[in-house]
Every structure is written in structure tokens, then in C-alpha cells.
Image (tube, rainbow, N blue to C red; front, side, top):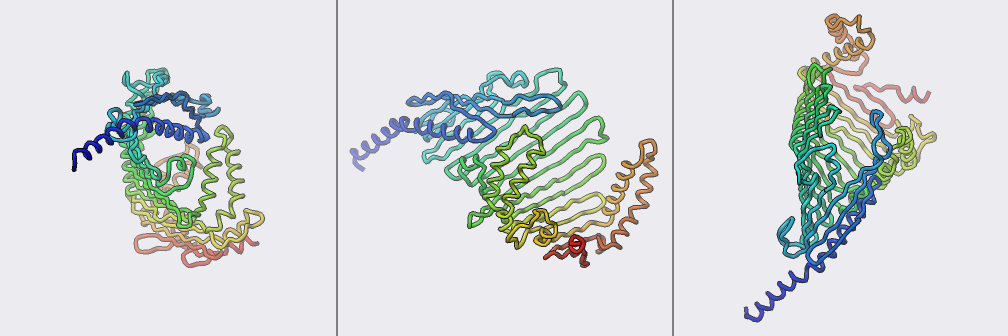
Length: 475
């Protein structure tokens, strides 16, 4: 390589580093304005870029975010109609970045919640921002960022509520058509003078959304997956003989869009290692649910409706608005023959195991009935299949618990004798199970009771026996 070519290439690199900040300054400003506008488009938020000053190597701005709460009340206490948060943005322009998120890129930034009004209620380290984010914008438009919420505790007050939070850490990446983010905290504790106590340990979550940020904020249906895990949830109060403890909860979700981009499918898989309390002890709980053939246009329209509903309205009013929406969209939703499946429902008790699954699908609907709630019509266009298996000792125990609950509800407290009530429950439980067998609701299979139900073309079949439900409804 000649000396002239080498010097020419070096000069070009120097020029690129020198001129770049002029262009990246405008890129930063445009990006900030776009994201603020996207947040402002959300019904629950007002977001404004109240000040932005862009220089050669840096930019400064103030973003005011207002969260609309309305006139919601809680236990008779009126909440403010809105909460304001003021964020300070500082950015450095590339290509050579030395601040906030050092390296090579278009820009790096710092975003902080600097309003200290929260210190009236919470205590955290002096000089530290309650919320802090740093990130960078790469040469090809992709960005990476890290954020955190400060470790805090409740300010001493007369309410008798103590709060301790270990602090939150998060990390994410974003490009033109994908968003990744994950975060979590180690512990959240809450206690009251009345003896109530909540303890949440090791919460983590991750999300991967295969969509641009603008579409995500607009409530568009997208492909992606997410996960949430909680190591332990602990709750107790003075009225409880033993605390409620949930251990190792895990939830994984997945959404997909069909090749025609008209329908979507979603799945949710949940597991819980154990649940213990004074009345129950369960291990290895699992619930897997999937939904298929969901019309995307209807889903997005419903999300828009829900987002725009008045949160201060009476629940009955909100439900009526949602009911009217579904009646108008029911034909469009039904045409794709949507389905709901409980792919797995299982749990292990001290007395034995329980397993169940279920499928339900709308089928062959070319017009809606009049009136819309015609039971015969809908049952004629629903195909369903359900299976249940429960170990015999567990079935007997559950029957006893049901009898005890009825006795406690029926007998006045002065006449309740726990020992006699338990004896009566143990005597009646086998009789109830025997009656269920005779009536055909369950059958015996080895060491378990099982039940199989199908609904196909309007025919109900329970454990091999057709039930005259349609005939009864038609009469």
C-alpha cells in the first residue's frame, strides 16, 4: 500500500469522526421525538418533549410524562387524577462515544427521573436518581440499553406500612423490527401494623417481540415470546394458622401469526413447584393453555377499545361496552373457527394426582342466530372434548372437603363441632362418589376415577352414554 493511499484513508476516517456528530445530533432528536410521540399516542399517557437543545457533540432534553389515573378510589380514598414524572435526557453524539455507554456508535444517552417528590413517600440514596437508564445507538440503527430502579424503603409515617425493595435491574436491545428486554429484582417486602406480611423473592422476566416499537405501543398483535419467574411468594396475617407460600412459579408465553397474516395463535404454559397453606399442600402444578385461529383485526380492535375505555366508569358500563363490541365482531371472529385448549392441567396432592385436558372449537358458522344467545345454535356449532383422571384417595379427600365446606356454611358457629363434622364428612364422601358412578359422571379405572366428555355436532356423550341435553333445550 502506498503512503499516499494510506494517508488518504486515514484522512477519510478522521473526517468521518469529525463530521458524524453533525448528522447524529439530528438523528438523536428525530428518534427522541418519534418515541415521545409513540408514548403520547397511548390513551393512558400524555408525553411531551418540553425542551430539547442539540449541540455539536451533545444534546439535552426534558420529557414530561403524565399518567392518567382519573377519579379512581380505593377504600374511600380519592387518588389524584394524574401523576406527573419529569425525565432528564442527556446524549452524546458519535462516532467515538466516551460517555454513558462508551464505544463506537451514532449516539449514547442517559435518561433519569429527577423529580424528588417521591421522597415524600420513599427513601433511597441521596444523589441517586430513582430511575436511571443508559444506552447507545449503533452504527446501523440498533440500540442497546440498561435501566434500574433504586433500592428504596417507605418513609416513616402514621400509616403503619413498611416497604423494602431491593432495587431493579434491566437490560434490552432494539432494532427496526425486534425488541428484547429482560429484568428483575431480588426482593420486595411489605408489612403492616395489623400483622399482614408479603414477601416476594427473585422475580425475573424476559420478552422478545418480533415487531417495531411503534407497532408494539399501538397494541398490534405480534410474534414473540416471554417468560416470568418468581422464586417465592409469601403471605400471612393474624387470621391465618399458617402462611400461604408459593414456590418457583414459571410462566412462558408464545404468540405466532399465520402465513396469511389474518389469524394468530397464542399459548401460555404455567408451572408451580409447590403451594402450601393451612388447608392444602400441592406440588408440581401445571397449566398449559393454547388458543388458535384468532382473528388479528378483532384482537387489535378490542385492545384499542379496552385502552380507550374510561377507567373511572362503573364496571357494568365497561362490560356492556365490551359485550356490544363482541356482538358486532362475532361473525368475523367466528369465521376462522377459533379454538381454546387446556393442553394440560395437573397437580400432585398428598392424597394423589389429578390430570385433565380440554378442547373447545367453534365450527361451521356461516351466519349468526337470532336471538344472538340461542343456546341450541351455539351448542350445535361447538365441538369439545374433555378428559379427567383423579386418584381415588384424592377424590375421596376432595369430597370430604366439599362436605365440610357445606356444613360450615349451613350450621351456625355455635353448633359446629369440628370432630363430628369430620366424621360425618368421612361417612358421606364414599356415598357421594358411589352416586356419581351410578349416574355415569365418573367411571373406575385401576386406582383412579376417570371421566370423558365429548360434544360433536350437537351430540353430548359422557363416558360412552349420550345425554339428551339438546332435546331438553329444544323443548
